[in-house]
Figure (cartoon, rainbow, N blue to C red):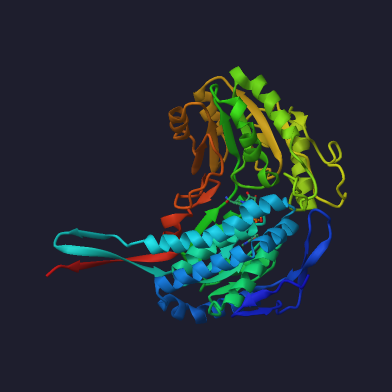
Length: 482
Ligand code: TXE
């Protein structure tokens, strides 16, 4: 495969240092291709290109920018299968998942914000003989920094509203997953998006991401990634009074109340636990079950997990592929061992040596889905983010105890509640210290809704009007009426 290159000022270029990194297929351990190991000089070139394009792009009409978003949605839709294959190869996720989630949502992100822009009207407020007009203008040049778990899905989730609001962009995908960002840039070049509107700089976080956050002319940073990195980004950006949006980690609770219809929800709970090998910040990694149904639930859940098809991500029948890398595989395995050290019992799965995946290369970062029980809900295994195919089971005796357990981590991103009574679930959800709660469903996404977390899961919200507000500056113009 041709090398991945930076995309700066409408052209594909190497890092000025000429240095490169390898991107690896996690299912085989093979090097797919190289990407630029960029540095601050490349960030400077990209930012200069973005600034040169800034005033012209800001002067385009919303209608024109909406048309560019529709064109991008159309082009990505045409490339749907290519995108799915690239994403599956770069991440080790099953091709079926890459189609259904990554490629489809990348198209939807552009389509949604185009249509949201068409319907959006700025409010006016009248009082004291005056009419107040809310005037919205772009921030200018914004920096988008994204992780490796849902590479194009999360990049386009930021690119679409940033473009819609008239900003120009410097984007940095994870160094582990550059392929679909590179494809997005090639699509932008193919459809003739004005040069400098979108710029892509590949490389290591501390070398490229840090330079973006430090750059005085990148006036807003939208970051999705780990909490530890989020702290660094915030510490760098805050004294510069930059706008920052932080979508960070999670340790989400799946709460199964005593009246949950167990015959109907097992497949949903397996999906909520192990989609993308548990590498979705919205996955439920702790399952809290009413003690009255715990044993029945446990048997059904373990049996449903046992039905998953773990293996080659290029196979249509595979429901779970690899984790992102051998390093991450070892990190997740260290948590499985910790879980046992902390008193947990492995009900199914285990480390790759204890529970090997059949018919896959040893160089692949494969792990079987693992379920542990018997751990305190305050144990490290049950409170630290693992970000892999590992869940812990816990029982509670009443709703108050379930709420206390669910809220007992430093994270607060998402959660789900399962019950026959939707009203009971809605009331329970209001007691969870998270940004998102699903009742009798999971990853059910209306893109108009606020998305984000509290506590160590981040600052700010994305989605619908929340994205428009982040990627724009508001001026209130108060006009005294004659
Ligand atoms: O994150 P990292 P990863 C979280 C999830 C998991 C992590 C996985 O909790 O822990 O992200 O993604 C760049 N200055 N979420 O490991 O390392 C880095 O190069 C600036 C939650 O990739 O934080 C990459 O491009 N940038 C989320 C990006 O930051 C830096 C959904 C993220 O890298 C940097 C998805 C630095 N000093 C994952 N160091 C949610 N809440 O939606 C690294 N980077």
